[in-house]
Amino acid sequence: MRILLINKFLRPVGGTETIFFNEWRWLEAAGHTVIPFGMAHPDNVASPYAEYWVPAVDYNRPTPGQLRELVWSRTAAARLAALIAATRPEAAHLHNIYHQLSPSILPVLQQANLPSLLTVHDYKLICPNYRLFTGGVPCTRCVSSHPWHALLHRCQKDSAAASALVALESSLHRRRQAYAPVDRFIVPSHFVQALLVRGGFPAGKLQIIPHAIPAPAPPAPTPPGGAPPVVLYAGRLEPEKGLDILLTAAAQLPDIPFAIAGEGSLGPAIAHELTRPALANVRLLGKLSPAGLAAARQSARLAVVPSVWYEVFGLSALEALQAGLPVVASRMGGLAEVVQHEQTGLLVPPGDAPALAAAIRQLWDDPGRAQQMGRAGQAYVQQHHRPEQYTTALLAAWQAIRGEPAATPAAA
Image (cartoon, rainbow, N blue to C red; front, side, top):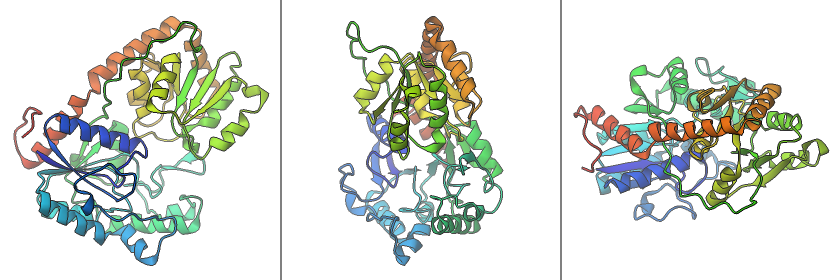
């Protein structure tokens, strides 16, 4: 099958791109032809289809013409139409299309009679600022109400201008039902499914397909007397990730070493906090390579995901489970579907540092229990989140849209 894979970034940027490139590899490994479409950039992957990609746009300093394209990109629609005419794909899967591509490309897919899937990686469809999080707390005002709440609360970068722009964008898209041409929305969790239904999306167009992750590389041998075990946080350093709660909990556990891996806007503030004697047990590792992150997980006793926003899924938690680590996580959004309480980890109330500290203490002081949970987590990932399960579900979704009977995942 010839499959259009669409994402505005065609280079490694974040979790969405990790999923996008994994899918690309898995589909090609199964014998399918992948035709990528997105935004041009010097760091993009090489592709014979690059001539069709949309010119790069920096929306930090947009011109009036670029602002119009942000809401409805005629350029992206024209480029995609040309790519379809040249390659004649049979199906399409969209990931992050906001701004640089925009929903202008959806009627193009519809007119070409291509069955289309759109994976929901964030809350942009029901929240102008993507996150359902503003002012340091979760927020669902715009889910079933008017998106102009984003302007009233300056939800985008705490800027009136930026907030007005995203509120206008959301308002226009809702008014013209810009996402109606999508045949099926792929959501990774029941939590996201329920929110989209609340936001007015037809339940019949929503299908749950949890994210998958590739099989891990064999672990490197651990040298005798290697690094001591730690409690590991691996993820973005952003306000919604609950790093302040984690540091408060760490200060309550001075005998337990913590390691924080990742980068983000809070990096400098966290580095400054770690100069305090009360946080001498916490190390900031910065952004790690895949091999470095694998090594960090190998030396950890448990992983922690203290998010204070509605996680869409919890990919970092799934990766930790695959590495054999029990996970202490907030009972928040999709995380509660990835981590099974008392089986593969412990769930705690979001924003509750004492509860987080108590859960970490439980597993730290009981290595046997932690190892048992880690093994259960690995078995769970192997049972429910394998690549072939993911690609089979996608192929079945396209076939169902066409009204075809289900088939094996072999290439057409």
